[in-house]
Length: 260
Ligand SMILES: N[C@@H](CCC[C@H](N)C(=O)O)C(=O)O
Image (tube, rainbow, N blue to C red):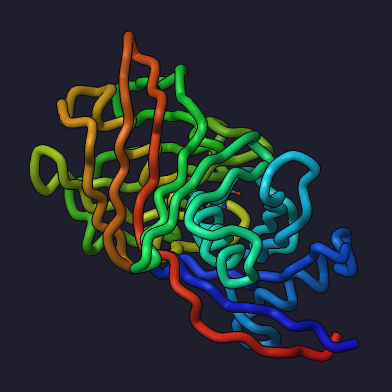
């Protein structure tokens, strides 16, 4: 059997996209998903995303990490899926869809910039050296002195597998403040078990954590990641963050067919 796939990337966080509106894809085949994401034996990606029908909204998002397991929300993946849904003729310039963490609204402009509404955040766990919060996926946020030379893979893995987060683990974001409202971020992703070039739920967590801990008083924050630039904006009221939008490019790379 031949599988048609579409490769997308959002600030270097890359995904294999599959149009599964006919429900042909073997969703429980972890080995197959892992192989499709493998950079030597497959297409190569940080994750795989299925575009599916939804009874009420424009579509449904099903997300798998590159280890082949279905996981929690992927912000960059959600933005890329909006661009893919447009390419497939499912939407025009705005979308309503359901993901594992619930309802999402998004817009896409003529330059492929996608603004994706993320879930509201009302719990931010502030500790002395780090902040933990869930923006659809769990995120540890920690300020570091020398972000450029940090070994994100090994330092991130230590925290991800530490007693802090038990079996479920957490994604880990290392942060350096550049200006009042500009932060550089590098992320270790659970399920990829490596540094990725960008993490959408991660930079959303960083923006909220930096605001909540008083590092910035802005509600529009620029995040510089290894693969480009993202923006996060939100409303905040008594420590509750709503109308949270993750904004940035979502780019089609190529399409192809692979024998299963
Ligand atoms: N790259 C993603 C996050 C994907 C989920 C994460 N790896 C997890 O399993 O928690 C993003 O852009 O948000």
